[in-house]
Length: 280
Image 1 (tube, rainbow, N blue to C red):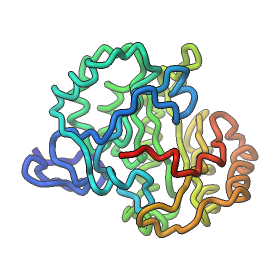
Image 2 (tube, one colour):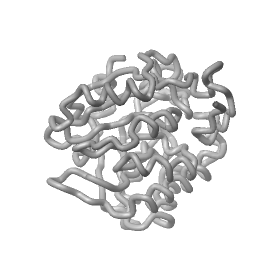
Image 3 (cartoon, one colour):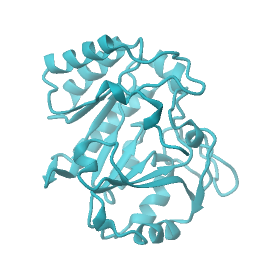
Image 4 (tube, one colour):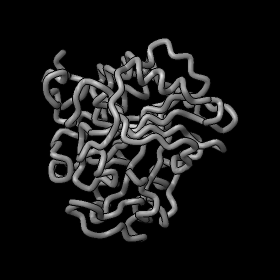
């Protein structure tokens, strides 16, 4: 089966070889963290999420804080049926959500696994934002919340950091489709049961790019819920060698408020710490 799960459109047979994501046909899980409370409050809630970190990645950013799994691909493989049984082995009522972290390159297998899955808590699609509209339409049938990153405006920056010059053009269309599929943010006991949260990580030295991303959200997304993050850490092979300055984050935050993007979350600057990076 040739793979076109993501916009890289490798077209490789992942039963025989690896895609750009460095993964084969089966779902590979790097780590599961029960009661994970490092996500937005409407995802984590009081009980935390059942956070499932997938191995590999279709974007593979050079600065990724989860480099050990996104680039080196540590993990355990599951067929779609085995992954379904893995989920069923947990008492899901003990969590606020299921948090599928970097799932895009396993889209087809996860859709198969989650088909007709009667889940008592929201299933969150926590992705890089680099998705195809066609796949988002399919994914929307098996998940409740989309939580995409919206990383770059500049094609030069996205090429330099993620070897992906068309990131913005693809991601904005994918996020628009996510919002079309989950048009209203629906809460129950302060937990987001259905909807879209758009994340943006402010990168050191790139505040102007962040401002352009916020302007694009304002222009293209109706009533957006955003999460503005400051957690960048210069780990592994990152070409950016410093943390974000507090003033840089303040400039971007002030612009968000100025243009009326005042629904969502801001991140404590102390989150830019290696202690918040899971041990893979």
